[in-house]
Length: 227
Image (cartoon, rainbow, N blue to C red):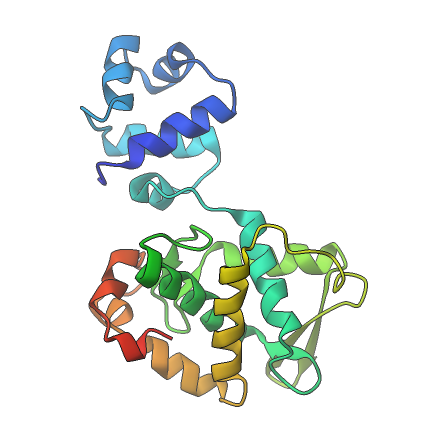
């Protein structure tokens, strides 16, 4: 397992106001053993890592990666792309949107060695995509921020007018700039083209089906093929 994930666990514990004693008891460890773990001098086994994931409501993959996802920011990234009106009617195909979100996260890592949202992307047939993508879309629709329209086999997503004036406070000017640049590049491209593009990148090629794609792999990508 990643040797930096102890930092994530410590931050989550402090956020929830839990003591080291409480966590150690739930893991079946002595407090002294847990303290050694939080200092990065020891690792948890798979069973203990699974318990940690359950305690903090995150996935095992997020425990292993040591990256804390910013779910609210990820939803704002979705809205930012919709505001770029990738198609003439202000809507974006669901699959195409997923690919552009992936490109933003990995291009940001390429430049700054950290993800924009912290989401973990899985290598699936129509991926890369985080497991949380579908939940994020559903919740944005339920909250009235977006609309989902179906035309034959196509799923089109657009932002509702009432949401379009709300600030995207989680995103910096530079992050919004990257999203805008990616949207501009792919605006007139077909979904199949961006799917092929992401599948031909180093991260997707190296990983196995259903595997979480390590962000570090994008650093091996040719500069002109990052997004």
